Image (cartoon, rainbow, N blue to C red; front, side):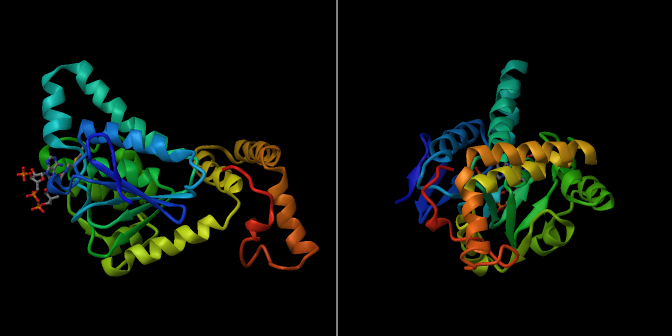
Length: 281
Ligand code: ACO
């Protein structure tokens, strides 16, 4: 059953432990208005620690993933109310992207169509990203006279090689899903008709993994990128020990099934988490 947020601009449904969350303003190409940003935080709150949710997929209703910030409601109307209003709108949008970057459950962006500007925030916030070949990605800010703010420039530099990021930001030309995959914005591009099946298959694989290890792993990948090797080594020792004390049984069961039971090989797949006593994510 599909649910909607308080103002109807985010839709969500949980099927077989996958939460399908959708930007739901198709008439406005899913542009992120302050209302949408507030509703998205509400939905993320609702889903994050539910036992029946193991993976979250962020998709878009209609022909867009998201056309970026709502130029009328997010910029023009908030600016008309002064700096306080602008800062509030920024806190709300950056707030849910940050929440998504450090989300308890693994997250997948399913980019079905247009993805512009501010959309790069949630794109980067998702751990994995899959796009339709037909999707179009653009840092269109330069086309209407601003720099890619709201983290978009940082996302471009984090995900793309320097020359690609510079060209992408300065030229304001769109790239399709296939090029987005080549440039590192997404993991893969597939025909739109195959996108949901691929994302479902990836989500199902994630559901088989130890959830405590998944959360520790995704956080580690984000954290170590800004650390020296020595700092990262230290952080990872401590993160592993913290995960061990939070989930003592999981890794022991993983070792048991490999060494004693010989029922799987960690190099070739995940251990059977259903054999271990239930643990909370
Ligand atoms: N902000 C506000 N309204 C928007 C936005 C947006 N970002 N994107 C689309 N809309 C609205 C349109 O104004 C239009 O509203 P209306 O029906 O009331 O006139 C409706 O959504 C449909 O848009 P169309 O332009 O008619 O749709 P089309 O499919 O022809 O084009 C496209 C889609 C290419 C995405 C176009 O809408 C567009 O260029 N949008 C702006 C993209 C953009 O540059 N976003 C800002 C990035 S910068 C940043 O986020 C900081």
